[in-house]
Length: 141
Image 1 (cartoon, rainbow, N blue to C red):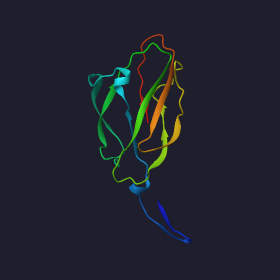
Image 2: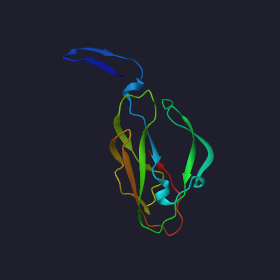
Image 3: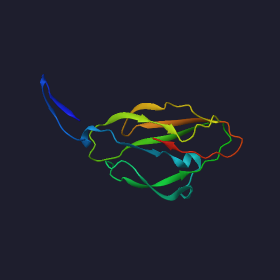
Image 4: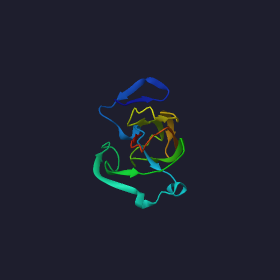
């Protein structure tokens, strides 16, 4: 529960039941600069499945987007922008956690799996891959 404390008098505080949206950092990560990676809009394919995200986001129901990249490199760095997920959120910074959908030893997250960020900042997802064939996985932020 959020607690409001009077400045200069920490003994005077108010506990608010429930969850206060203004106190939360609600980031959305968006792939940045797809043209640099020769990714066209047509390659961002709606899966047809709807994903229920946090009810506190401005758009909690969103279609999944599948990004298909082909690379011969063993390491790749993909840029993302950190956007504000709710207009009602006044907390400008917080922690973002990154998790791969697989425990395949051929795919390793080289960038931080948890980092402090703020709206408008950027993040590079760095992956090291050693695939013998095509791999399919997703990244959860």
